[in-house]
Structure formats: structure tokens, C-alpha cells
Image: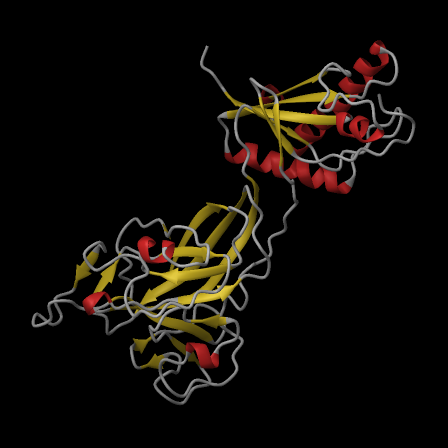
Length: 371
């Protein structure tokens, strides 16, 4: 039961429904901040003068291999200027700077860029990575392959060739496998910037981002413009700008029970704290993006107090959460709520810590089943 003016200390958990095996997670509210430092390439140490200058001239960005990635800025009076430079003409997507690199070149030569994120990504949470790219005018062809790898620490690999998953897995630094941006066609626009994005679920060690083409020439989808028939393999050089990584929310699984964070009820009052409301907004947004799901809310108490009182209190807690989700815009037909009193404790030991753990509100998402 909830004593007068009790404070609910609730931690996100998921419970395997058949066995009620409890596994701990952390429900964190997120804001639309960009975790990529200097994602627009506006901050620089020196105005570009010489090519192969990304490591020297830009803030936060560098090349993880021996590939010689370039940095361009309007301030440059050399071939690294904007809009005119040694690869053609292109205005910045925004601001005054962008990066340039080969995504396809003879003998599997590759260039990459990497940046340390502003904070470590949270395990089990979803993020969206996006960027803008434009094919340089002097490219011999276009590709459909650009991807991302996340690593625990910055990479420094002594190669000029592609960073395949085999190469990455041989390194002592923990990395994810390369994930491709979704492509509906070749990235062949030399005038306008093309926007691409991909969603990831973090493993919890991601501190660093690497961008480039992680496939060999043989594995890359390449469109040859036939500009120089004498060449057996051409070049695809791209400008990159406006790189962002934003938080989307937890990655909820169906048929698993989650305990809500920060749900704080005083005796006979059912007001939600701001942090609890943010957690519920994450739940609401996830349900909005997944209209095939419905949610059931369950309220629970500790073992103190009468059975009748605990059932009423747990039911009110569940209804408070359900009402808030409905106020946010969730259809009533997609939500149910039930109070279970003290019948399903997470911890059966008769301690204050166990009782705080048992005073909770949970939710389970399930798929609609056709009648």
C-alpha cells in the first residue's frame, strides 16, 4: 500500500510475461539534441589551405584510417573553398563548411570521417542518424552505399582500404557492424543535397561515430557515368554536411512488462511528476508510431494495508496513467487499466526497499489480433 505522502522510486524494468523474470533497464527521457559534435562542420582550427586536411583543420572530426579526407570552407582562397573547389561546385547545405571523401575509388581505396559523440548512447534506446550528401561534379559515377559504424573509442586503423566488418571485428576496440543508410536509388545528384537517415537501437557502449562506405568495390552498387572509358574503376567523391544523431526514445518490446519511472503519488492524490509525464510521452510517441499496438496499464502496491484498500489504490494509479495517455491523444480503444493490489510483488522480502519496489505502475504493449 502507499502510505501518506509516500515517494514512489520506480525503475524501468521489463518482465518476461510467462516467467516473470525481472530484468532492469533505465527509462531516460530524451530531448532533441544533436549528439554529433560540430555536425555542420562550422567549427574549424585553421582555414583550409592544403588538401587531405580534415584532421588538421576541423574541430572534433578526424579520419580513422590512412584515407585523406578533406575539409572545405568559404574562408579558403585555395581549391578547398565553397562553392568552387577542386572537385567542382557546391554551396554548403547550411553555414560555411562541409567535408569531402571518396566512397568509391580504384583498388578499394576509401576515406572515412569519425567524431566523438557528446555522450555515450543508452542501451536499449532508439536514435536516428541523418546527414546530407551531394555527389561532386567531377565524379565518374555514383553509389548507393554509405553506412555508419559506432565504436567505444576512436578508431586508428593503418589502412587505405575499406573498413569491412571483418577488419572492424579484428580490432581491440569494440564496434558495431556497419549499418547502411536506406537508399531508394543511386546518390547521383550533383546539384542538390540529398538527405538520408537510419535508425539504430543502442547497445550501450557507443561513444564514437564513423561514416563512409564499408563495402569493397565488388560489393558496392556503382553507377558508371562512362565519362572515361579507359578507366576500369572510377571515382565517386561526395560532400557531407549536416550530420545529426537525435534521441527517439526507448525500444519497447511487445509482451514485456515495463515499470514506469518517476510515478509519484501522495495519499488520495494521483498527480504525475514532470519526469513521469516525459516517460509517458515516450510511451505515447512509440504507440503513435506503431498503430498496430495497444497497451495495458497495471497498478500495484506493497503488502501494507487491507486487501480492499490496496486494490482501490492500485486501480486509481493505473487509471491516472491511462487518463494521461488518453489526454495526450491515445485512442481509448487502445488502452486498458487494472489494479492488482499487492498480489504480484516484484520482491517478496518484507523490507522498506522491497516495498518501495513493489509500489509501482507497469505497462505491457501487445499487438492487435484480428477477431
